[in-house]
Image (cartoon, rainbow, N blue to C red; front, side, top):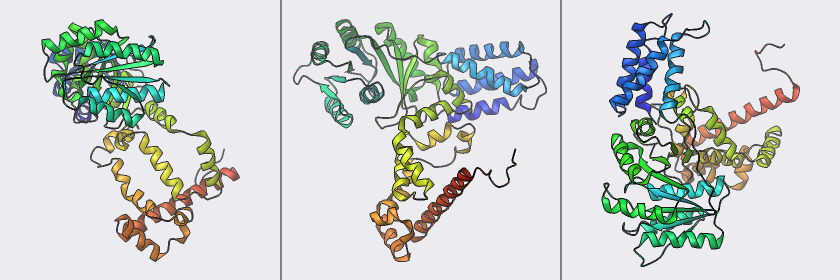
Length: 442
């Protein structure tokens, strides 16, 4: 995400990297390039100018310490201002009601229905909430069916009223049912239009007045740029919503919506959608996003994602197997699946400082593991647990069974053997207390 903006900002900092000190001249040249990068990213010129004027004023007032070079200081100043521009701090949901009611709003095609299901899954799995989804889009063909299908994937109940075309009454009835059945959270998916119109605004305003939600969220497609800003203003004037959701942030987005929307409507971005799967939803952290835009990585989010998939008991079992040199293809496949659950592999790599730029032109996604998975799944249980039995004939069978060439099968098995040898050497070092070869002793 934000690859183009990241590249242009990096290019802007070249004006000042290597300089011995900050001067009015090199600061002016740098902020000019930063402003151009922001405008190219579809940030409103007025916002971009105000942003760079602030950076310039702060840079001119800074004294560079011996331990910090001018380039590092400028990156720090821009990171701080980007964080401030996007909201400053993380804004969570307000879930104080019994049940808490969340009203979803937005245009048709913004990903509102899909996000409603993602949010339900997030609250169920990460907040331990019982959630009721409510289908109030009574106009769009198959909208109710879409919500039902998504809800069945995550094991969440959907409230519908067949034949009732009054979304205000449906939402009110749903909240009453939620109270009776003890649901913690009600998420109301409302109708959208292709453009803002009076009928839609009157309807969603009536729903809000009827159910008095704890949270009203505006869902916007991050790829729509400045149009997202105009739409958010129109919705906010009528609904006074509590927060923004940016969907499709994994797409070819220039970043204008994410960088501008908080400034324009004074409402925080609360969540972002980063993929098609139900798990592809994240709380929005302005400071972490600023760091990623500037190529500084996001180790905190990477660790959090890893911790979500971490199973202490399984890790203990795996550790014992590694110690005994019994790590097999089944263990490898399990670890691969855990990594995939963390999200898109390329995005995960981009969270490591410096890796975003290195991975830019590499075609890497979760499908990259399909060949490896196919080879392992073509193995018999004996072959998975005992890799040493994989002779020439068995490897030929795996080639046919997995749709890979014999060379690809051999390459993977060799890589697996090399990995096991490395694990074995680490275990020996750990057991003996000896340092790695070439490392000095204390």
